Image (cartoon, rainbow, N blue to C red; front, top):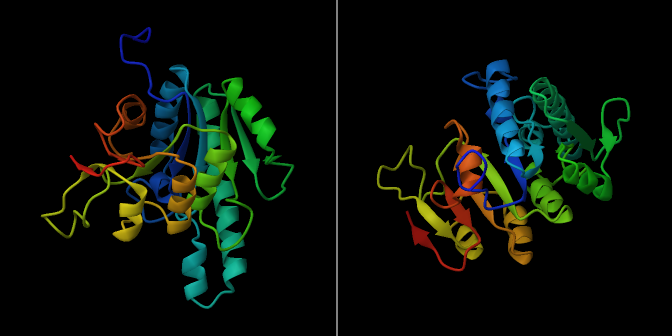
Length: 250
């Protein structure tokens, strides 16, 4: 038991993957300050429990590269614009965390020394060891790769024990639960079933990277208060664990 009487977290070092849309609140685009403050408060609680936490955040609330390319933009240019959007979100989250008293560093895959450190793996690990939150911005720094893939890559580079994939639903379902009332939630599911069934967990490159390196993914509902800590303490009891040997229904 921890000092507050609750079970200790299952993992000691994790990477939290947030979508850019998570920062919108009920809005259609941009950043919703109360939502940002709420996420920062939950991250503070997790860090206070002794967990070393890194974060990758998307940029879809500002600009999505794939959407830009479908409208006729050059795909590489659109993806770079999407990377810059993740930098805006990373700086906003850093500000919210530091207002909560959480020491935070932003490391960018695209060099912009005035506002962020360059991504250096060993420096990122050292920050984590000192109890700082590290936010990885600008994806992998390469077009044609999503922030899901960036999250998988960075998680493996820092030797994270799991990826926490925050979504707006409470796990992985057999179908879209908003469209199909018969959809069932998985308590656990293996990587190959996610790929075979084309389930919307992360893109196939990210799933394959995790599978090759046996890195579990905990998919959970970010909108329920306290769920980040619950996902750390009881993965599978809330949400879905991707990466176990067997597939099990909730």
